[in-house]
Image 1 (cartoon, rainbow, N blue to C red):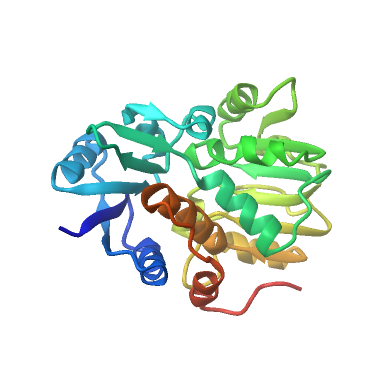
Image 2 (image 1 turned 180 degrees about the vertical axis):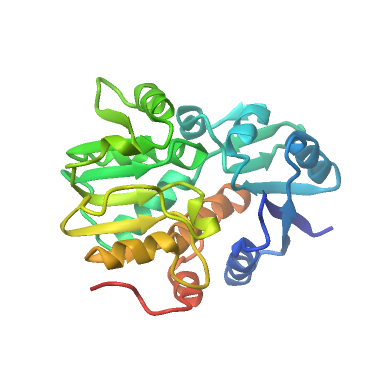
Length: 277
C-alpha cells in the first residue's frame, strides 16, 4: 500500500505542500501520496487520529493547529519542545505520534543560504506571538542577532513569549503600539493577517536603510506585507515560499530519510519575478 501523507490546516486550499512533496518524491524515487486535509476547529485531535488510523504515515501542520499538534504528540523532538509548537507529525512503528518543528530551520536556510541575509548582529523584529513565531525564535537567536523583538497586537502575549523562549533577557516582547521610533534590519511577519490581505498595524518607519522584509505567508501574487515592504524601500521583500520548501524538505527527511534538493522546487514556485529593489 502506498504511504500516505498530508498537510492539515484551516484554511488549506491554498497550500502548495502537495506539489512540493510530489516533486520531492519524484526526485528521490520515493512512492507516496500527499494531500490536503481541512482541519475542523475543536476537532484537531480527532482529525489527526482518524488520518493515521486510515493508513497515514505523517502530517504537516499549518495555521492554526501547531500548538494543538504539540499537545497531541506522544513524544517531541528538542526543537518542538523548545518551540512548544509542532508543524510535523510522524507515526512511529509502535503507533505513537512524534512531533517535530521544521519551521525554524526552514526560515534560517531560506534567509541565509538562499538569499544571503546576515542574521548575525542584525536587529530583527518578529510580528506575531502564535505558533509560527514559536517555531522560529530560538533558531533566530542561535544565529546571534544584535536584538530580537517580538511584537503582537496583544502586548502581554508577546512579552510572555519573549520571556518563555528568550534567555537572560535576549528577547524583548512588546505591543505593536510600542514600536514607534524603532528601526530594524529585518522585519518578519509571522501573523496570519496576510491570508486576509491585511498588514499588522505597524509604523511606516520601521526599516533601516536597505533593511529587508519577510512574510512567512505566501500566495500566487505578492502578499500585502511583501507590498508593504516594497512601498517602504525594503532592499528585499520576500514571501514564505522558500521557507515553505525548506521546511518541507526537512519534514520529508524526517519521514523518508532522504534530503531532497530544494533549489528546483523553489524556482518552480516562482510565479512572479524575484522581488528586490
